[in-house]
Image 1 (cartoon, rainbow, N blue to C red):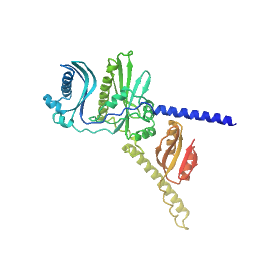
Image 2: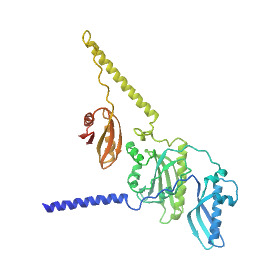
Image 3: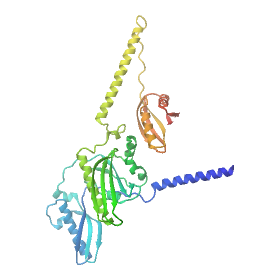
Image 4: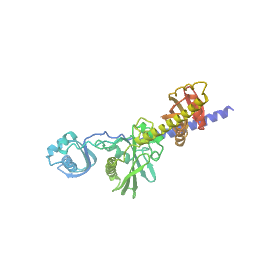
Length: 417
């Protein structure tokens, strides 16, 4: 008997260790690319330069001055001297360079200080910014869809992007820790508003943007074609798509950088057109503002219920009056309605479907005025706070009537099916 117990214990420990290793493999490893700091300075990237000089340093200086002039032309700056131009440059970003004894070939970025360059370029109109948008970059290559599971060039391109002058308020996760578990390609296809509300709350975002890059390699080391799709919201609505080509792996970062700029333009155009309005169902029942149309429907429903209740009370009052003619007076008024109370309810959530079903069933129980999920644990036990008009015994009875197995504790319930 003791030998069997030892074998069973070893097997259990082995399974536990294997499960721990699986979880560790999912959240550990070399993951995560920290986004660059957002700055309102004016940045111009992907400037090609090729200059010769007396030596390497002379060639570099000539190339950087040429890059400054090219960048100034791109932002439609007026003619000024090289000295004035240099005084407005706060940084030169080296994207790629090759240095020879007397030649300098590079792809550079130039950052102009907005305070100094603003008087020449104008401040521009302060357009309305979007609500915080959670960005999920997805790479599709060789039949595999990757978000934050491992570092990839598309994630790197978005991390390098400076959204300081963009009208979109991006929330860019680094991809470290649990990001690879919560934000993956499968998540972008979910339709559950309850699931999305909890995910967005973790990142303090109002809605979600999905940037998909489908990369096709013609052959190893050869040209790469990319199809890019900008999507929005839990419904994964397609905003626009486009295609770009690169000559090979060395030119891939430039292509992805250009794609990020175009994606940002697509999202800004959608914001201008009114397409990036946060989904009201993502904030319903939370701290956000409810859509006026939905709020109006709720008010109408409450008014109908109040009218029906008043009609029933009037009918009951009439019957009582008829029955008491010549005898006793009217019946005393009943006790006032109880104020809603909050109760903690734990519920088993082995999968996402059971999570959604439990929330919908509890919300539909009689007497429930609302609920909020305080802890989500798919594959374990989640927790919600339920506002209920009545006692905890009445809430337990209402949930049993909905088909739940209920275990009652001190001001808390545990339900399962």
